[in-house]
Length: 420
Image (cartoon, rainbow, N blue to C red; front, side):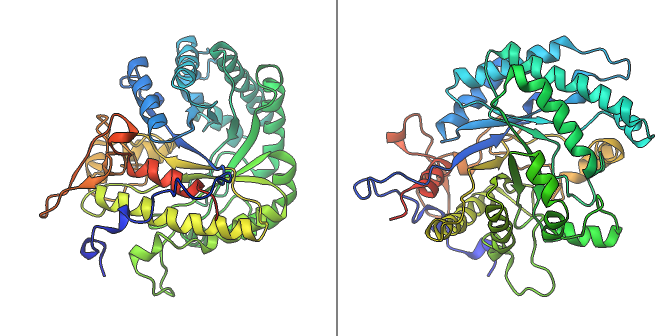
């Protein structure tokens, strides 16, 4: 059965908390959201960021994850730090605090091309030196903000067969030491993390390319090969999981596309492995795009409902079996964005006018995962409870919880309600 033919009553059923029932604490899993607006100076004014942070807080989000883009801080190999960008990031952290959000997750991000050339050209010592300068800039941002960070994430999806090409795994501990040293005064309690992609498509891509970062193609193969490095280097392991996008039914599977949203077997296995290490872990990115005609707001809303029902079942099972629970869940992302997150040749290709237009008609990896559109309009999952009928679905906006909560706010409460 196709998603469109499914009765549109499912997303609103079963997500209410039983306020008069259990008084025991809930699961206590924090929710955060990735915000990439700071990548776009033309749309990341303080007023706009205040609005975004306040709205995310309203929907039950605890904190924000954002990139401190190395290439924005130091765009050229002359090494001159752009102080205006330092202040921009520091101001964003102050605005998060003013909105009542908890300290953010900072992604120490992709190196600019000029720095990558140093590493690829065998000038590792020079690369480590300029990374030291970047790490110092991250510490300066935190100091200037007058706030703190909860987690500093070093790189993104370090096991990605196609997109992670920046450093070899054996160099991650040295970079982590540099970052910790720079943060010891600015934010000594911040946890250091990195992220992994959990996806069967990653294995297939790796097999076709015959190229990974010196690891087996599977996520379990990567974890087995680099277990000691990951344990010793990072405080938190973050898992990115995109059922229906990067994790798909393969030929051997007979599940429908819709059922893919609740396929958590691979994620569950990885969580159990990290729990056996007694390692803190979290879901770093999960979400679904609204690119037309393949995806839309209705399907995105259905994804959130279906995935988090399955996720709630998984964590309840973990709790009953004394398996360590994920500490946090990260949603991807606040608003739709441009194709600027890959770097290098891929980014240049995606930003070409003809290709840019084409990606609007395809499930572009970074295209429309936002909870809001690029213009800031809320999508269905945060518009509020659906009501009305006669074939015309419309949504009730809300200013206070009494007037109706968004589906996302209700999902977050549902995930964290007491087990009994």
